[in-house]
Image (cartoon, rainbow, N blue to C red; front, side):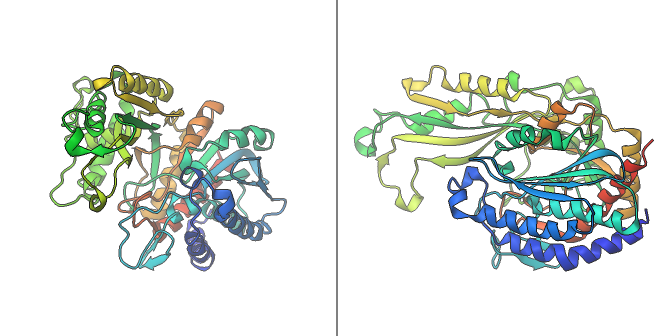
Length: 482
């Protein structure tokens, strides 16, 4: 494969076709079902699916024998299923999603979640980087090989529409399509991140998650604080004390032993190498306010590694459990807060579980601890429908390790780098269990300041082009593997 020709191809298809379509896609508020219960009625998801399918059909005409179907199971979000015949042995499963996170506040002036804005090499707006580009990059890689007459294995592309809700619909589609999918020997997932924009990054692990609502109720209705405070306990104080059962309020470290795992030695070494590459960017790329500083690194004496603080920070965000409060209910805005003792407090808990941890056991342990013997016998419930396991990548096959390095050197002039990610992609855990012998390329363009899920999300266009070209190299090498 002539990598230089692939790079020219990527410049052309991204500039002339992909960026214009993604620009229109950003305008669609197709929020994931967890954030838009009436998604079907609103029609935004259908609009995005139609846009993607129409573009893909036009490109598939250049790949003879290819098929595209929008698969619909009753009561579930639709799924785009693409099959591209192979000219070499093996099956490649390529994955992405087109549903989006909600708006969030804090977008820079002149930008917004549904307002596509291109500034220099960045395309701002919700969903372009997470993860609207994945289908376009996958097809671009196949088309680049076709242009040069390079063989590739059979490719199956799956674009789902419920990932940001934890992929509740996807298992049903995988079962429904199992015979058509077959047994992939390579999975390419473009829904992850990169440590910088200077080289190719391979994701080695993903954390699992437990998401649920902790509710503390002390009254059936609000009452005057002057008449009740001192008699009725504060629901907020009780909620705060319950959270301290699972998290050290001074350090932010989780205290439940059931939520920890032994970190594999190779992942510790990779964290150290990543920290050496990134330096202060491990933490400085985050938008800290004022004089806020990162959490203190947690050193693990059992590891017997003289790791840097950066390496420990990487392990904290990728291999150790952490808690975030991502929503609250029961409180008016400050300007509307009267002298009323509020009847209840609800906190949405987002608990990240280590890659090899058991999310269901974690869910049960957290529920038991939070609900047991509450202060003042308050009415306390923790409702978390399920836990989602994380994922730890299998050892790379020699051909794939060599291919990734070749691609990174050709695209960036630097070797591939390895790092776990603190987020979750439920499909990877599902595939890892279903196809234990499969090789995985989990990567993406969510790098420094790209801010997926938050305000000012952007897609780094030059990196996206190089990533697409790198995937083409991997597909070519997959066809020629021994």
